[in-house]
Image 1 (cartoon, rainbow, N blue to C red):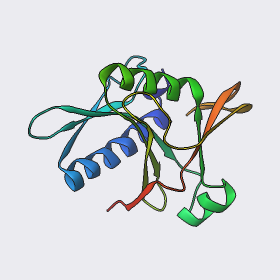
Image 2 (image 1 turned 30 degrees about the horizontal axis):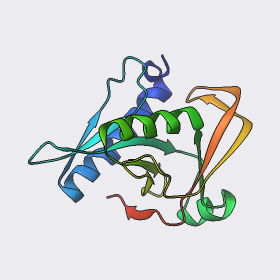
Image 3 (image 1 turned 180 degrees about the horizontal axis):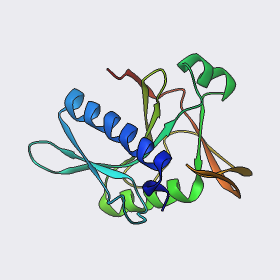
Image 4 (image 1 turned 90 degrees about the vertical axis):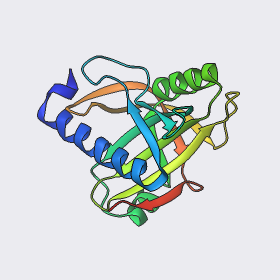
Length: 162
């Protein structure tokens, strides 16, 4: 599994760093799925006091972006993520009656973009463009031809993570 490699461990550490920041900033619980086996979603967010589930979360860390401005310009403010991951997360969120949200952590500038992707009924609330493209297969490299989602992040909440 990719998570067991050096790059996988770095990605996990960065995801957990962003998750701890979210927990402190918003008094929420970021409950990650087991990382030693495949899971359809990365985490759920729950109310810290009542433990009520508030959202299903897809989280990604990006390392090739030096600034928010570079993301907005070079990537047209679009987050590329495998469509099957997003689709599964939306379906799981809908089955739980909660929204699906995306966390895109730009590691170098320490910027976390938080975007609601769908409502509890599964309706998209941001533009999601689908395209079959060749992209990096995993954290560890390789190539994969698959349907990817390009999620519009122009309305994402932008947070400096410190």
